[in-house]
Image (cartoon, rainbow, N blue to C red; front, side):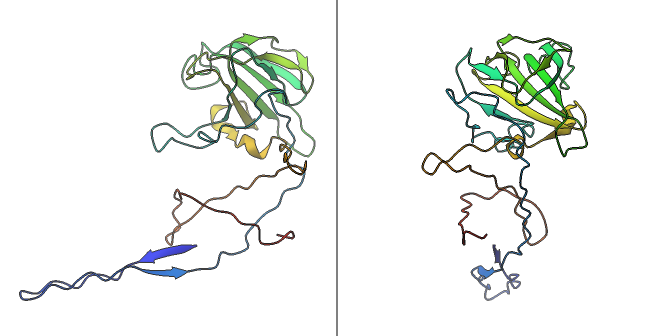
Length: 228
C-alpha cells in the first residue's frame, strides 16, 4: 500500500513565504493477513444458467452509490420480468407475499413481492435465511418445504425497485434487516468460461495510516503464484 505524506508548511514571514514541499510517497509491504475459506460457498445461484447469473457489479453488497443511498443489504441479478427465481438451497418458506406490513424491512413494501426461506446448512450452527425480493409472481406459501433449485417466483419490479431485477439477501442468525451478510461469500462460484474451473471470491478492506477504512479506485489484484 502507498501513502502520501506532506511535511507541515513553515509560517510565512513578512518578507518571504515558504513554499509547500511536494508530497513524498512511502511504500509499505502489506502483511500476509489472508484467510482462505474452503467450502463456504454453500448456496446455489437463485437464477438458472440459461439466464443472467452474474451479480450486478455496479451495486454490490454494502455499496452506497457514492453516499446517495444507505449501504446495500443484498445483491442484484438483472433479468427481464418473468425470469424464474430459484431457491438457493432446500429449506422452509417462512415468508411469502407482499411486504406491505414492513415485516422484512423498516419501511412497508420496501421489497414488494418477497419470499424468505430458512435453511439449516451443514457446518453452520446458526439458521441461515435467503430473501428474494421485487418478485412479480410468487409460487410458494409460508410453511412449505422447497428443494434446492425449485422455482419459487419470478423476477419483477415491485416495491422500491428501478427496473426488473432480483434482489437477493443472506441473513444469518435471524430473519432481520440488520442480520445480512455478503451474499457473494455464500453463493457457489461460477465457472471460468475459458478453463471451466470455478472462480472464487476476494473480500477485504483498505485502511489508511490512521486505521480508517476508505474507498479506493482502480484497485488491481495480481496473482503472485499458484500457491498464493
